[in-house]
Length: 43
Length: 371
Image (tube, rainbow over all chains, first blue to last red; front, side, top):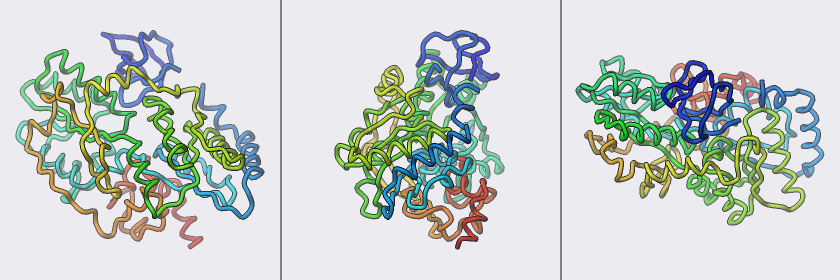
């Protein structure tokens, strides 16, 4: 999923809030492998 | 789309299929287990098995998280959902899994406040918005999903949210694989290893498979070409007399996994002495519960949970399907009494369940003709 924004420490991807603690800091445009609301891998 | 289109190329698929045909030994039967329900879904959706020679058989393993939840745990969840003041939150698939007295969806119809969520973070948001209610999250899944639950509980604790608990049914992948390998019912030649679980745990935990059981395992991605290449890698190991862990899914899976995720899991969870799996029975050290540091968030400690063991319906053969002993269409009730609309067994509920995958992608009709 592509990060569209980062709000209050959560990434917004396709309108879904995603926790990013497991992949480090992210920015808009980053692509993440997301499962159950948590980013597991930065692609 | 990056990492998708290039792994669905039909010409490359045909070329890989030809390499597989060239690698197999004529007259030898190969039985490979795909551990993960996501792999099962891809195999049927894209007809991957149709590209394999007849002597290469794929059987389905216990890696569908919804499929392995026993009826008694569903009953426990329904009992909690009916408690006064509770908002019971659950993933969509889990709402349709039958317990002995119905499903969570039926409990909702009877008046329980059961709500579908996309992630545990959604459940925590509901808890924030309803401070006068008790919000319970029904946590299921392997090591892929457990970090999401763990991070959510860490947020709840950091924010001091007291009306949020977790009914934990998380499981781990290695113990059931070991149980399968110890089973006399099943002769396997190799494993297609679970890609998403491995993003968290890495490939290293699977080293026992070649070391202790002399079977190859290849961690695989989820696109059709990933699976074809993984099958080829397993067959090549067998042809060359090798037996090791290989990682086909290197674009996503580091060999040592996600160390931060492993740290989070260790902080929030601890292993149960044993946990019941549908069809596999009780397996030692295969389930997770909340650690002492998170006991205040444990729904099993805050609510009365019946904890009664319930036998599966006699007609249902999910257990044999999950162990790869029978194919979905060989179950007595497949496609008749048990359908995705009215499932009897868990394997017919989830999109990752082998029975639902067979049924939904039209394999049902074809296999019945073969019969």
